[in-house]
Length: 459
Image 1 (cartoon, helix red, strand yellow):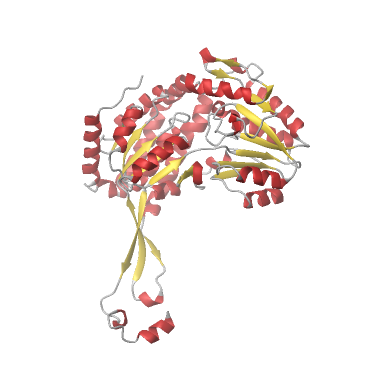
Image 2 (cartoon, helix red, strand yellow):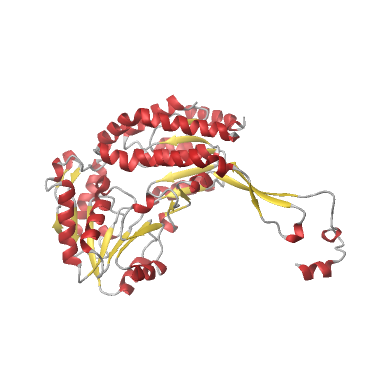
């Protein structure tokens, strides 16, 4: 059971981090590089404990824990270790002729004290991946794990305490009360991953201090399967993307819009691929995770009533188990189509013309991800007439694995982005500097603007 952190403890850590940041130690790129390498070594040392904690909290297999959590953070660290010196160097930019002989450059400065609040669905990756950007840019960080995954939260606290001085990086545990205490402080950046509802609370609190935010939220990510899609491949990739972490993934395909000509074949292939991956006895599979808690279980169980269960629908509250479930005959107005599902329930709706897809998606909030299966020409058309945080053509989830791509939402699904260079930028301030010579000083810019008409012609 995770306990709340006292106001006095938070005040002490916050004050220590302000002092440490103002010592300018984190401005040293060599210090940052040293910390990144120490961070990487710590993850390798704690790998087994991290994996065990993820199993305890979410019943994630060691393989899934490594692929979707541990390896992603290690890859991010490797990229920052390799690139930090290049990224942190001042960048020369062109100077317009009317400012010559001045020169112009951009200096990358750390924003300062950052607060990183993580969710429970990928409790290690979504806490530690942003931290890589904070370290790389030269920020201090307070980490706030989710209390819903206590085993992972505890391991992260121990890893951080062993690796970093608390005045530099600290973990603060707790729930809503702790969040409220933290949000009363003026941070230089708040990085939050979680629900849209809580994201609004974070943004409101940040506005009191004019604190910038990165909000990685969610939404109902559509998955379009067109008439000319490769159905066996589409079904395999959709089933994989939907069932990783038992569907508790912010970019999981939330619902399918299938062309009416391929709907039945798609459902058959989805079922076949689900059973190929996990076996027909999902409950006893070594690879099928569990729902995080009873509250989430109850919410998901109720959604099974919002359509005809074509497959699955098996639940066990004591084990927090919900089998992969396919819903048919779902009304667009049903609750399952109004909120992000965040579980192994997959509604399948149909369409006949591309315009129906475009209208359906655009009438709803902007999603975090968008998936299309079909020919490239049609994909380009539909992508150009819709929007989302990111997405894939003929795949699911793949865009989050490429650290050269920004990851983030748009509108209701979030603001700001990170991963790779974008993580460095997220925690940095781009400071514009013009360096001017003193051996010449054109009088035209001074009152009374002599020669103004000539200069006006040149500008």
